[in-house]
Amino acid sequence: MTGAQRPGLMPALVDWLEAEGIEYEVHEHEQSFTATATAHAEGVDPQTFAKVVWVRSSEDGDAFMVIDAIDHLDVKKAARALHASHVKLVPEDEIERAAPDCEVGAMPAVGRLFDVPTFADHAIAQDAEISFNGGSHRISIRVDRAGWERAAGVTYRDLAADR
Picture 1 (cartoon, one colour):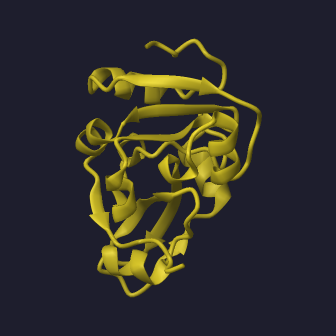
Picture 2: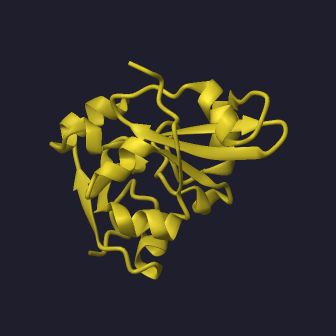
């Protein structure tokens, strides 16, 4: 499906999905600012909605950490995934500069669009399909998880905080 003309949908994401041959659905929904609220607005199980946390380590640079909407990132686990002593969140003003086509907090789960690796929690691998933000707080993308995983070069690690 083509969605390049939809306001708020990140054009580079659409180009990437189409170049990689990943089938996708564009879901427009009420504006929402948390991953769980976005999953509900989209009408999908929050355990199949991927939340992106952009982190930085002094040893290994930036990375996307992708976890289920209902989970929280364990920064110690993220540091271990990056073989770093610690990680911190990338400041919002830097995200705005690095991703001018995205609203802050609405990053798609594709680090390759920003030249950073993508790590995902093991729980993500359990889903046949996943959704994630499409660059806007009003648009989500639903994709085949295996196709996304392959094309995005996802590395799986234990990232979610223990419940």
